[in-house]
Image 1 (tube, rainbow, N blue to C red):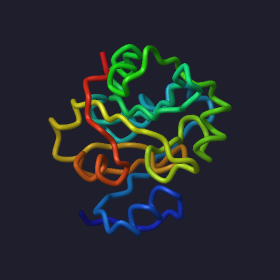
Image 2 (tube, one colour; image 1 turned 135 degrees about the vertical axis):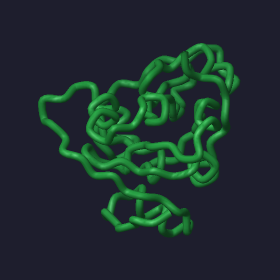
Image 3 (tube, rainbow, N blue to C red; image 1 turned 180 degrees about the vertical axis):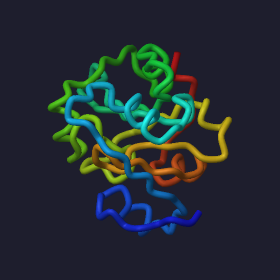
Length: 162
């Protein structure tokens, strides 16, 4: 996939190191935006079903799990819990997510996080040749194959979006 230029984010560094093909898509992030995935989809002209957001959830044990779901949907916390063999899951506090990943909310990538977490990718990603996810900062998205996304993150695929 052409258009590779290192942005220097942990995500792009990890992809370069793994020799994974990807394309960067910068866009003008508005500081007033609060729905980051929708902003990115609109700015890039990408269907919200094809652009994936990264969310962190906390299990009763205190373990954090990363969920990757389409912007068009919502994370089903019960389905995520089932996918990782837990009784339940709750969204992590945004500050906790930022500390664990080393990235800011709205720019958290599933790739290159500071701490390694179990990762679950919604199975709807299989419907596309390529998907989009954050490159590790607001205003920058990565495009790569869902197979590469799952491989480089160690994600399992499961139906975790509704």
